[in-house]
Length: 514
Image 1 (cartoon, rainbow, N blue to C red):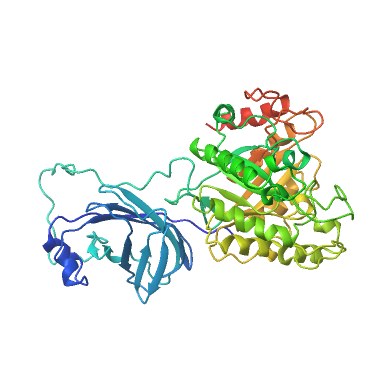
Image 2: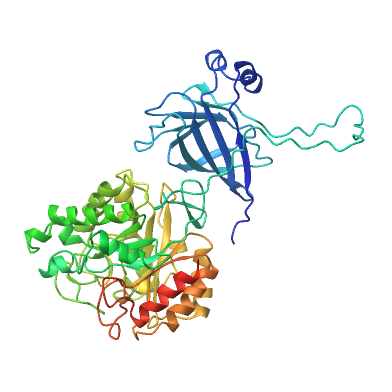
């Protein structure tokens, strides 16, 4: 069941005298109390439910520039921080410390930085007190007193004019600049200020297959002009980047010009250009190593030349360790662990398939040691990466029925489900979406990483996008490549952005969203 939302915004404004600071903050040390405030803080409860809440702080530095920072405050009602982002969060008793990360320690004079957390509460969830930045006071305006006056107040005989404040009140943040710094809050993707983010975009195929086929790294242009063409479709905010495991790791069969360091440099440059243009990149493992010749096998090759039912642990774990280390400094980049799992085609029962999906190891019908979703997630988190991680389900990511019961453990809480939906899939109607997708979307963020139809029409995707919009869910069309849309879902006929008839469905729909 979706948690009820209550938004509370409390401004913590700077006080300009030591006496006022001392009056408001009696618990401060004598050193801090004797100094002028060096910051102001906007503390916001952005979401609250029965036993939990989401908090956000926006720090404005009014003192000397910092190279690192430690924000401290105290809870008044026994609240506990359970996890956080954009800072290292720690709590001892009632005192909370949020210390800067490697990427956000510098705050110029007049600059701002934000961080957020999830917490627990009971009884009352009053705002914290005693904010300090690097030990110096950030004065606080508390909640208004509700004590009645000792004598009745006589109304004035004439109206008293309202005098506007000499300085405008602090307002809640309006959201990150594009692309947003992403994390998970409840069942939503949000940016560093707590604002919900819904991604819309396209897949850009080629980097999963060309390098393994001796055809270079990209299928078509990926320069600034190519990104401008993608952005010419109003509303596109994300591009999914499929990767080839063997090319990333530079296996011997991959041409040296297209693999290893050359492949990594090309992919990193592509991702960096997308970020520079305000686009959220979703990097994902598409083709992987391992011999599979069972039901629905795409090839008999041990190499990463087709879609396998699950990744090979020998290669997928170092792959994700390397990818995460490459991109972990930027939480605008999303990780999608494996394109389209189908261990259900190799195993005899759904329970076996979901166990293989999560836990990996020796899986029935698969002749190599499988890297399960938990294994790959652990590899990512082992690098310190806090990026949002997507996980598709069974049946080529079309079946999410066992996803909630088999959700891997993520210490950061930044986990989301992915689904792929085409007109030829089993779950391809609103009844199935209501019964299978909506319950998952009520618990965790859900991203439709691939949507499409193979008829060069768009009536199916039109109906699915409308369903996704009604649930405030993200989606990306397959694919921004100039292929024949009558034989597969190709959005464009030219890399200048000319849409196919199928592509017009996505283009016009996104434009209609405003």
